[in-house]
Image (cartoon, rainbow, N blue to C red):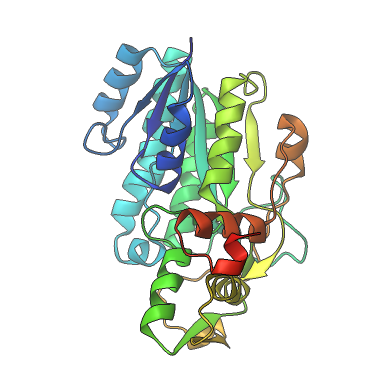
Length: 295
């Protein structure tokens, strides 16, 4: 039987993993900051040595991109130092660390989807601290798999999809950035990919960096329009705007589409298109308009 530790289990991905873990004969231990502060090296050492975990899935992160600009030390503490602590403890105990990272490690200047080998050049505190966390994992000597993902959303917590659903009810029009291109990723799809990989022990011998997002390409404006149409919010106008018209502290990559070929081929993944997964998530939220829900 496998012993699996999930850190940051109260977040979007962590909650999806917990839902799947309930179906497993293996032992999954879900922790959030109240149970395990990954920035506390002593607590991390004790947890991994006492738990004798085979796999650690690090979902803990400082994901507030704007907030990271105001609190770079807090972002570094979680995204970099926390990842380093987990990696060091995993190296000592022999656990495999599955660490989640982000498309924001890239600057968005590429005209083709980013592969794992392309150089990182983060533009924001969030991106820089996540990149530092990746590097700490790589140099730790532990067995690791790093999964970069993008534009994560789900039924849980705060995310773009849920924010749009709220704003489309409250307002007659919503302005959404149209010049940032990437791929919305449903946390349930990423969780299922990781869960299947763990349950099948497919991670063994496959250490390295991988990309996972849903298939397809969209701007935030495209995503918002898709949400509005599927949810039947015809009254609210979605108005495209440029990034420089939208007040933001953090710079974001203009185009951060991820190439998933390596993960797809290595683990035999069948990755849904972002629009299909958006409909599924809206259905779980009970937010689909009637004709869509009957498809």
